[in-house]
Length: 120
Image 1 (cartoon, rainbow, N blue to C red):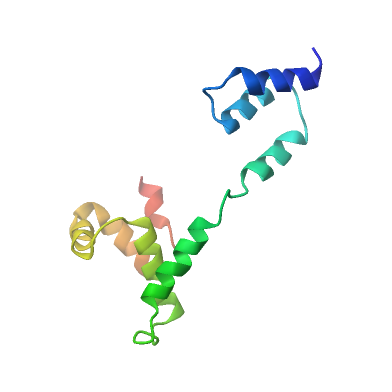
Image 2 (image 1 turned 90 degrees about the horizontal axis):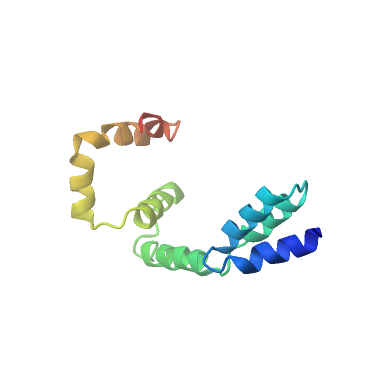
């Protein structure tokens, strides 16, 4: 079967699959050398810049004229916490009091980050 027809058939026949799943199916069916890299690059491009705009908005709300003495590291830490944890401050404190989070807290205090992930 012609390679172009194979790709077209695989991409159109599976309407319930997402685009990336369709490409995986195509790559399993035929042997390609450089095409997976190209498709990976294309699929990694964000559809919009909404996430970036959200981060700048959060940073603007956090780093106000009254709080302009915050260090860059502190602003970064607060933003990372705010983006990655969908909790109120009191909920976050209760989350950290849990004994299971000891490794996370110890890792946060070290210079080498992400050591806590090795335990999960």
